[in-house]
Length: 443
Image 1: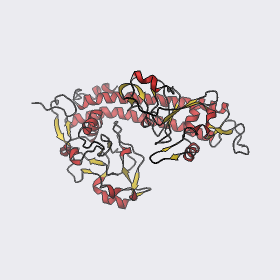
Image 2: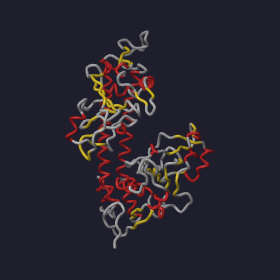
Image 3: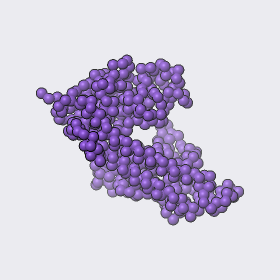
Image 4: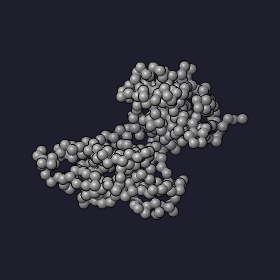
């Protein structure tokens, strides 16, 4: 009887085999281990620089290979106590407690030579003679792989998987040459996505640098360098931020019934730290509920949405084609085009001056921080003349429009990759073909 694929209800293709994680791990010592015991890697050992410790924020359950930023560190000396937990290029890291399904792979061109996994993670170094590391990553990191891992979690309140559970997970392995072809096809998408992401980051940085030159250092066209007694150029003033927008709206203070499809219900997690709206993983509301959840405001293209509670200083511009509503702890600014520009405000929100205003007005609660929306309209900002703002908008708008277009391309590339991945991992698409055929597949 032909074996069934662990992730898909279909027979294994000819030449494929089922192995467990324990059978594909590298034969070397410490190739498949759990993180350090909790108290042995607590915050009291963290230092400003050293060996980075991987935590949940560095992993994703949305097929992002690795988030190589936002680390805490331990000293080189302290790291010697975690020899078994050291991970390097091509090692896989699984979250084993809390957000089950997160999986990452250490990049070959990462920012650090080695890392240490935390007490909530598991390490897997595969035997490359049996399994290509990236094949294993795509297998467990795709949507079906994530659900497969989650289905083995134990515990109701806080789910978890033990090292024993990880070792027992089954993986469908085609011959190595086929694994590498699958990896090559999927990596073509990832390479395009990464290239676009780099271009987006450059465009956004250009816009923010221009803002800093004009509105922080006052190096804008036509200015001779002179300032008034208040330190501002002529025609500039200090005023409340409300002078620059038409309306401020907050989201509902409740959560709607979930729906499998329909308009988007934005959450804090959909706003990235870099200032983009990430709609790769969203909640939906039913079409018939849309009117109720947009009574206060219906987001429009060009509106600026931001967080005001829990995770602060997240901002994004509503893109064209978006249809949805604000979620909890989110607010929205609608700019008055006669007085300002949404791009001027958006860039301002990333300036150190604005971040200081937010810090000074942050209220620290028992569980979360927040900024009071009732006082937000009076937050002080520097207000240039409308003609200066308009000129800035003219220069920056093409940059951010190009960034938005690239962001949409990346969304399409991810969608194509995610549709293709299960067909490749299951063997539904036969990749035992020439390189020319492979290029045609991803064209």
